[in-house]
Length: 388
Image (cartoon, rainbow, N blue to C red; front, side):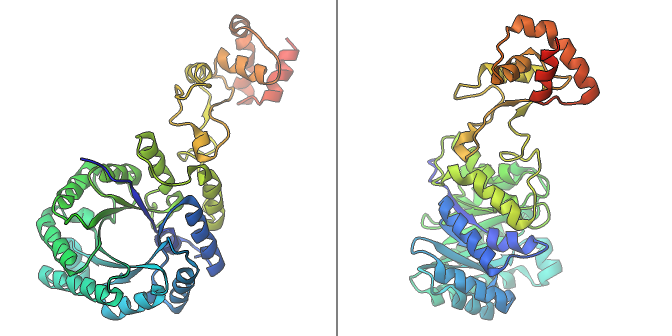
């Protein structure tokens, strides 16, 4: 399969914002919208206009402020009045997108919608047709089958519904893992099955939540299964355990030789700002941006890191962090688990050159101190060394 350039449809302003204890103000949303455009994200979901007057006004303001290259989307239920409201909120954008969501899983149709499947299909097709009539030839219609990840037993029904929606005017078919329950392969198999049936003009999309910690993996593998559009949130914020993380997905695709079209140099700066705005600190062990991700403390790891620090590929480095705006690649800490390479490197950084043989001779002294004091900062290492 020939893979097209991935398309990122970011929903930080909608799915991310709705999960916050204190949702963003208009000014904060304008800032986030600007950050997304600086990154090179062209498709941005701005909110849920029919949810409230404030959301409507915010979506309209974002649509009015958007540049001519941005695709400005907004979410709506498959309800005619809601679709009309959504269209009114973003119609002023150069490239509006009406995003219709309706559940097609057996469990949700029976227990939440309480409608028979064929009635749900009729509702979906009618909603898409109405949205297309409002947009005319301008803009895009996206249809999302909420809880697609739970549709294993009725995948044929779902696929047929997708095809009917395409006939009614849908440009994008979105398959969400609304609640992550199973291994990625089960989901991507369904994605591949649907992609094989969609018309060539229609873009396949996925939207993965992170309930079991696999949203990045599922999104990446879905792309390689044919889902060109990937829905994401900055820093992976979102309902419950969050959404697929734009930064992680882009980094993986970049490692695989797939161009992302994004300004990756701005990733670290943007992640820091989103953490501040969302009041959601970046975990020390979080991939890419956690303060621990470039740190090596084990002797074996330190030896490999030291020997490959100037190479394009590091022994224990997933990528060159400079690509995402982080200055340092490999940092060495010193604990009782560390080895002579750490001692050589830390002292060298302070202008003291010693041989590996000499480091081996005095290593035990530093380890003994570390057993009592914990990790030794460079200043403490210099102090101990000067006393030997």
